[in-house]
Image 1 (cartoon, rainbow, N blue to C red):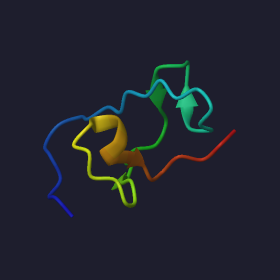
Image 2 (image 1 turned 135 degrees about the vertical axis):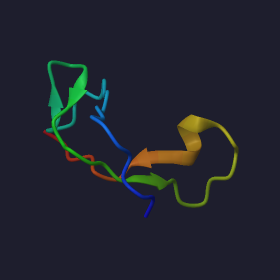
Image 3 (image 1 turned 30 degrees about the vertical axis):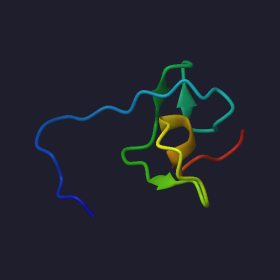
Length: 57
């Protein structure tokens, strides 16, 4: 795991179907896990990474 960055970090999120989404723009979690999508190696951001912390409302 990468070492912690100094200062205050925020997590922007517009996935309103997630239970951690606040006000449609912010994530209430203090930390999220970003995971690769299984079996996909296109190089496109929408294909290569997923929020592993996502939970449906």
